[in-house]
Image (cartoon, rainbow, N blue to C red; front, side, top):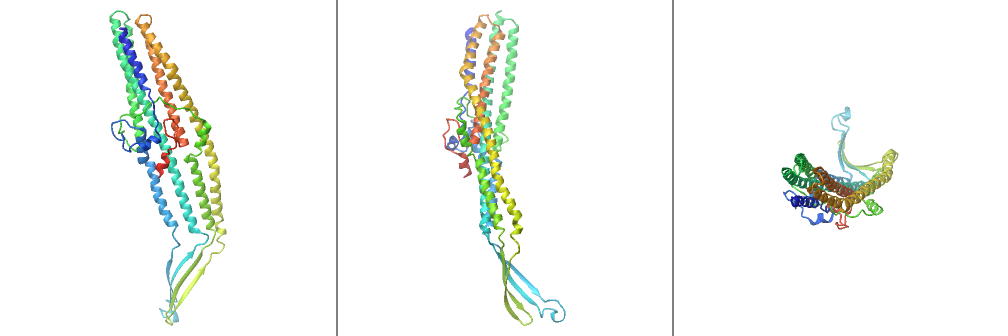
Length: 447
């Protein structure tokens, strides 16, 4: 009897330990090494690299930027065009009285006209649109980085949910074996009749936990798959575990990397855009010279003559003062918003850094100190129960303490990896030691 219970307990402990595995967050280097269609829409385990590739290629938000780029290419073409040439026709001295009745004294003029742009207006227009293209590219990089971070966080949640479900399944198997053992002791008169009732109640609760875990896993899988537009997940499980959490790292070093984040670099692109718009507004202060050339035909004498003309707007520069003031204010505003963004970035990074450190410390303590002690305590409690010195309630309490610690380990490891994904998003660089430093999927994707 004792060996039966010990065997069940050993399977219980081994099953729990196998549920707390290493989550390899291959956010950058592994992504480039994986085939795009590996495990993407099959029943095999989905990988993080495949999930990120699917999101980057099929997420609707990113498709919008391709359309914007196409639209800006059209604007570049228009901005580089020279002023149009107009063809005009004019008739004078027709339909009057006496000598000017009919068309006998008419004068007909056919002319071409346009303007001469001064102040490098065409170059300023092209520069403004090109600067806008750089801003759109920066926005796309930032959005792609945000998307990769969100994919990683939801992927971690699926891995953690899988681990919890595996833990619940193992607990249910143990509860089934415990029911058999306790009922056998009760039939032999070595345990009161209430103990089998408690054991069966514990089994029923374990069944409910498994059912809840299955529902949570389905929801977590759907939450991940919608990032690439799938309303029904095309995978059953994801590959990964929750054991190797890496080191906390140095906050100042992380912050120095974070200020190179595309979200911060975006302000440099926007500042160039505002400067280009200011230069465009400045060029508009230079008045354009209108010109026209043509030929005039006199009906009365049947003669023809060439005509030419120039037109210069008066006080044109003063009319552009408001546009200059607005463009200058928009340019100066960018630097102020960049300073505010840096402050918010530091606060967000520090919060994620603290959460990651707490998660790593908690997980390491549970794994190395708390859980081994609870395992030993459970074994000794089980032995004492078999010898009649402890009741079933004390044995069940020891089982629950170990189970709670295992769940806490999953929660702490998951929180550490979730925070790690946020740090990777803020720094746009890999964080965990299992990743190869220096690779940047954002740059590759934007190309």
